[in-house]
Length: 156
Image (cartoon, rainbow, N blue to C red; front, side, top):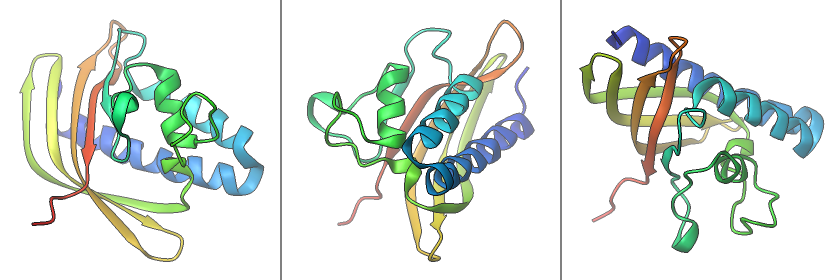
């Protein structure tokens, strides 16, 4: 059974790995960032279970949704001919992540979380997004992200 602590640990890991991707890019360029992002996707996302319902914050048109690992990698790192509008969300100099829970739902080996995620860049600037994660434990007991929806807060 998934617990609230499991969900929190998954979010913390997710944030730490966004920071690691940014630092890999700064230290080693795009190939280092891609390697870090690929490791992040392999360790945390459920592409091994099927399509991941991934809606990135800043994606639009026919490329709004990213059910494939390749689409997620392009969003995180940019520099993709197949996704020319992607600037590389994970290579923006992130240094920290914090999250605030609005609600969560847990039913056996499936859990959903929604709330706010704030990423802080190297200059101390914050970007806060509305975020939903869906998780499922795989056959090896690893908690996998199978839903990742992100959007900028509504500005009335």
